[in-house]
Amino acid sequence: MLKEYTGPIDLKYMSYQELTELGQEVRDYILEVTAKNGGHVGPGLGVVELTIALLRAFNPPSDVIVWDIGHQAYPWKILTDRKEIFPTLRQYGGISGFLRREESLYDAFGAGHSSTSISAALGFRKAMDLLGQEGYVVAVIGDGAMTAGMAYEALNNAGHLRPNRFIVILNDNEMSISPNVGAISTYLSKILSGRFVQETRQKVKHLLEHISGAGRIVKLTEEFLKGLISPGIIFEELGFNYIGPVNGHDLPALEKTLENVKLIEGPVLLHIYTKKGKGYKPAENDPVTWHGVAPYKRESGEFIKKPSPPTWTSVFGRAVVELAEVFPELVVITPAMREGSGLVEFSQKYPNRFFDVGIAEQHACTFAGGLAAQGLKPIASYYSTFLQRAYDQVIHDIALQNLHVVFAIDRAGLVGDDGPTHHGVFDLSYLRCIPNMVVSAPKDEQELRDLLYTALEWNGPFAVRYPRGPAYGVPTEGFKKIPVGSWEVLLEGEDVVILAVGYTVYQALKSAELLRKEGIKAGVVNARFVKPMDDVLLTHLCERYPLFVTVEDNTVVGGFGSGVLEWLSQKGILKKTLLIGIPDKFIEHGNQNLLRSLVGIDAEGIAKRVREFVKKSELHML
Ligand SMILES: Cc1ncc(C[n+]2csc(CCOP(=O)(O)OP(=O)(O)O)c2C)c(N)n1
Ligand SMILES: CC(=O)[C@@H](O)[C@H](O)COP(=O)(O)O
Ligand SMILES: [Mg+2]
Image (cartoon, rainbow, N blue to C red; front, side):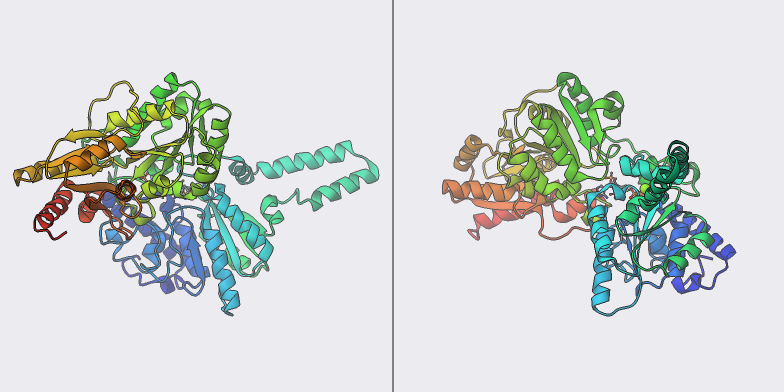
């Protein structure tokens, strides 16, 4: 089926039996490719029927389908126009693991971060109305993504605008990455389990038994009018027509529902239920692990493990468990990233001190602010890229009030296969400019532990950022307090000094070795505090070295290097300075180390730039 498949038009002429076969082949293909490349497995397997139904009931690209996040859209890629190039998924130069407008006309709106689909779809709808364009607009959003405020901002606006031909499909698999959390998730589960209807019957029975005469009729009518009987009361009250729940793996039922929904006036919320990982037993049985995976053996579902040092994430996870004993006031908050942030052990050992708040980065931050204001020591754990969502909260709710919130920022720098939506390459720039904020990055595992300890001993907002992937395997023990703002000279030199941050420190050290073989004596400094900087050491370095180089895995725009230039300017010092970091453009997806080498922040790249810099300065070309 899939071999001969040429595009969505084919789907319209297939029988349900053929479509079932095709669906199976799509699942096989996803498994074949992700087994080699890694990627998001469970989410896509769960929406194969939905994708087919959408492509049969609608006519994209003139009908607009907006997928939330896009991590579930592998079937969409295969069945629209990327069947042949699907094996390049998440490879450098290949197709993205998310949807991107530049990749295909079928990808109406790019994403990677969650809960944007309803807003974007509403924008499409209004634009099409104003331009007099026909067609339907559909947003597909998961139950996890429905924990984010942005989804409700959009529903609120849509319920007010009440557009026609506007459909939100809530794909409910009762999972975020972890099992989904929150009161809305509980409410949705109640609908799926049929408990809503049962409980409603109980309430009606109670009314019938306990209220008599005319009062009974009035009360009953009232309750009916309040919409007590509709399982989708929340959505109905927001101005949507609620339809569901519908089995999202029953293709004929799904398709028929979509055809009916097309006829309804006003916005529609179609609630479907699906199984994450559908059709692949390992993923069905363990949807948390199989949300997103590294390469694996398809037959057994075993992971292909290469020996490597512990990840930065696991070092953080262990550290917080130990720190919880030292600091009884310590509490940890995650916006839906318990597993990815290494917090499973903490959540199990200290369930009362752990808060998964759902995909709610803004709330997580201000919630941490409240906890801190009342005397606790919150660690707000974020992926760098997702902290972007909470920028105003960091400034307005935390820094302005100088509250003691520790921001543990994982996935800083280039993350690799997820690409530009997920690279954490802006945090140094966006945090450095906030008053009261301490911004730090460890060179290795022990320093990560020490910085976390230092942060908990501090009093005010304190960020510690560290990269994705394996650290170095340096032995770790205990915790020590590091003087805030202090840097560390790792290697003395003469010709040039390299001031490096976080991941780039060891790369700078290696580059200095390479340069030494060529007669260039480079000093290396671990600039573990991006803010405040080491005033005393910097003054000394200015006297000692004719040339400065700064290195960071953050954008060069407004990052650490810019901070050094600001410092020099404030002191009135003219110093030839080279800034090495992520260039001012979005970096594509691909292997993490490949990307690091392509942007020149690995040892060879740093050595090359420093060599050219030193040569130019010798020739007085600077
Ligand atoms: C703003 C933001 N925060 C966190 C994430 C990480 N993340 C990716 S998928 C996901 C779970 C989404 O759950 P759901 O929407 O139900 O989709 P499912 O994976 O169940 O299909 C999370 C938390 C993200 N992509 N964006
Ligand atoms: C889609 C999404 O946002 C997450 O699933 C993300 O891909 C996880 O990344 P890590 O693999 O770095 O945890
Ligand atoms: Mg889900």
